[in-house]
Image 1 (cartoon, rainbow, N blue to C red):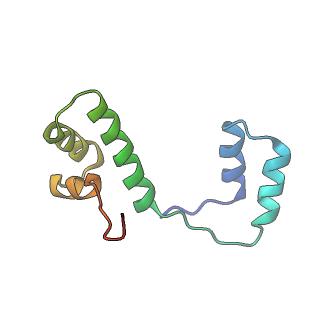
Image 2 (spheres, rainbow, N blue to C red; image 1 turned 90 degrees about the horizontal axis):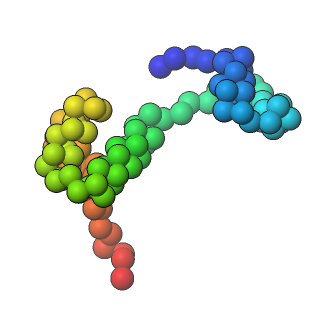
Length: 92
């Protein structure tokens, strides 16, 4: 885990061309807080997004899983689990 202070956050927000007034209000809102951004959930969403894009291009599921395994340095079985259609027993 890397610790980042408000100077780093402000610079990143400026790079994203966010209005300075919004940056100021954002910083004021979270002054004194320790914030942790979980990597796992965000990474899983990125994996799913790349998966959908590659499948839309006509790449086979096996090839997509193999490529994502290389890109995200995860086992193929883990990639298959992340990209599996997670059905719910509550869906009608």
